[in-house]
Amino acid sequence: MEDYKREFYKKLPEDMDFDLQQQWKKYFLRKDAILVGMALLIFLAVQNILGVIAAIPSLVSVSQLTDQLIQTFVYVLSMGIPFFILFFVSKRDKTELISAEIPKPHTFWPVILMGIGCIPVLQFAAGYFDQLLSLVKLDTYQPLLDAAFSPVTDTGALIVQFICTSLLAAIFEEFAFRGVILQILRRYGNTFAIVTSALMFGLIHGNTYQIPFAFLFGLVLGAAAVYTGSLWTPVLLHLINNMVAFGLNIVAERFGDQAGDVATYIAWGAFFLLGAAAAIFVAATAKKSAAFKNERQPYELSGKKKGYGIFFKAPTIIISIVLMALTAFFMTTLVQDWVNSIVQYADLL
Image (cartoon, rainbow, N blue to C red; front, side, top):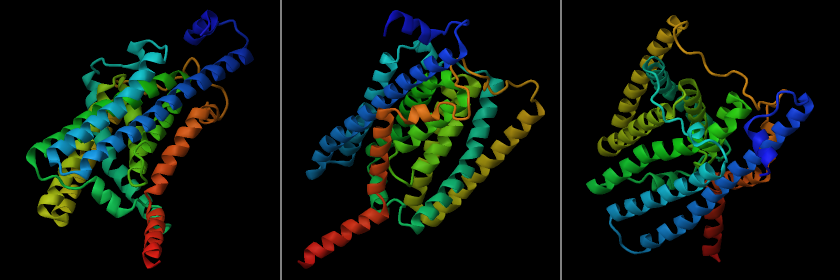
């Protein structure tokens, strides 16, 4: 990047013509969108390549512990490599991308409680959306879900699975989406950054069962990161959600679906009550609490679109979204029914 472009990227001259400022803002947003899209494409490439390699041991007899260790290794590399690359090539101040400061308790804890209070509401909304998808067979094929979330009986494997799906997922995914992508895009508007990073976060889950909740929860996580100014807030929220989901699955596997449903309703009820209490507290002490930092950002575009059109027209973003959407589509009941029909027809021949 030429010197003057690098300087403009840091700060546009105050005396620059308004229309010219808009053109520079669009230019930089387009460049940042291409970078984000490249990271997503690298993620898809690494995930698929390592996924094929990781599937090789399954052709022979391996222990559950070995299988979980391989899966964890694949996850760490596929989630870490692309976004560490984006982290280093973004040409942004590293402390700006990773807000690792300890948040203030008077904002941190209310946000955490309100965040977990949103979880049951978002789960209900995502479940309702999944029911709508099932009407047109675009819900995720159940046998594929069963295979992905198959129970682990070995204690060591269970511990590794917990570390991967709860702790590592919270750290790596928040680093990627709230620590890098959201912070890169925040200069173009907080709301724009929250919505865009949440959509990308939803799509990387790669199936129609998880995408709706991941997108909605991504909105909460992004807002929490912006509100408290710290990455630790969404990390803890993400960790709590994954830990509870992991625990509820264990209850259902060990004691049956009915016990799992009861435990789920208890957990959701407790979360909702805690969130409601925190919301009431925040409303009652609004003057003392920090305001949502949604002030106009220095590179935020004027107009109704707020940069969405430019971001989603970037070639790498288009390609990555198409690939992620296709991945989710191929896992649906509709496609799997087609596959089963073709296999049955071939058997008849």
